[in-house]
Image 1 (tube, rainbow, N blue to C red):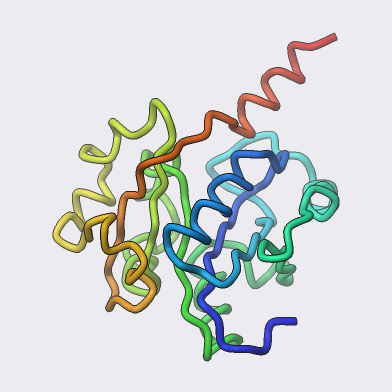
Image 2 (cartoon, rainbow, N blue to C red; image 1 turned 45 degrees about the horizontal axis):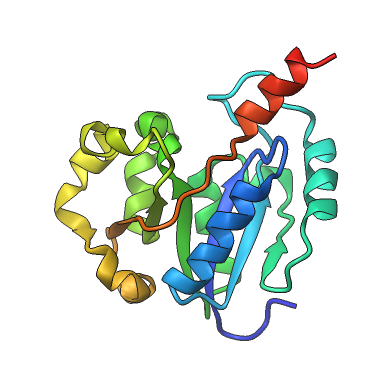
Length: 192
């Protein structure tokens, strides 16, 4: 399934629950970054998020949700995907032929500097940060993007991001999507 040399976008997260915003970023990245596929990786847990549903439940929901031939679910043993940096190192070692780009929404920037070995993430994989309404104002103030501001590339060059030496990152604008797992969970809590 994953043998041929490809350019792959990696979208990791709790997917609690998976939603159309995840699909939107994935589909947009296939075009904007000129990727062959996007692999979704459901994280075992997120120390920065409290109250997530169990891993198996989130994994099964994500399996049922996906129906796009270029967007795939990659299951990694829990011990290998404990943290983003661990996942990246694992993928680069296991799929040496492929070029990877880490995909994330701007909503993750606020706490990115709290992630395990967050600077190593930038040094190990190009990063595409997608515009999310109401979060984009945090980009100039986020500790991670301030630290790596000289490595930002123009979104006009985003199709070349996968070939660029790390650290390199780009802020991808143009189309946005309002869906959020947090909002979905909040609405379920408040519904009868």
